Length: 314
Image (spheres, rainbow, N blue to C red):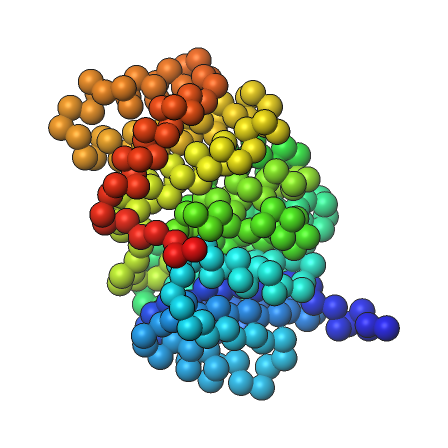
């Protein structure tokens, strides 16, 4: 029989790709998370060309519940995070990118709220600090902060702002949702969206649970990539689950897809306000339109024709 003390309370899942500059500080903060009884650490490297894997091995040497997967084929972050999620054994999973620094008491405090309010998802804010990684790896959350609880996780996700990793999600709910949409390269939008279908209760913390150090080469600078992935996260959600969604939820997801497209159009077309893209987007906000799949398919073809966008290799 398994001793209660041997049960894993939180599984941390980190995707890694060429982040040797950040990893010493990221791991310092991660491995010193407070208040956990028996955490698990899963690292999935997507064929880094630097010393990322060796740094992880050195920093975790002698620790229990550590899994390091050094892949032989580069496939992209969504596929890679799912490989880690599938291995997780904890009651809860907290995912992070290998350039995200977690305040050392953030998991403990998120977990406390999740248990108190019986919420399946907890998320918070992130902050771009502009500081060197080692300058912020021992930071804590503020002593007091506000938060909100919503029973309707899907509506909260659609009305909220999930732009970084660092969420705490109940493992059985996350795995039931299948993790990230592997057709979308960056996982940030698709994981909360798909998990919310099964989640009972969500908490938003109005304080930073992720600290972002000085950025070097970050995908968040490629706004076309972000627009593309945000569009497909919501378009694919409609394609996969439209028949199971209520009309209000479908309208909100449609609006989010059109919003991602409009952000791209504004930056890239010379007269964006004279386009069907703008008209459809405005109508979706005013009238809460139901999805026009023919129009969405046209937008999808345009996004797929872009050359400066990374694609999952599944």
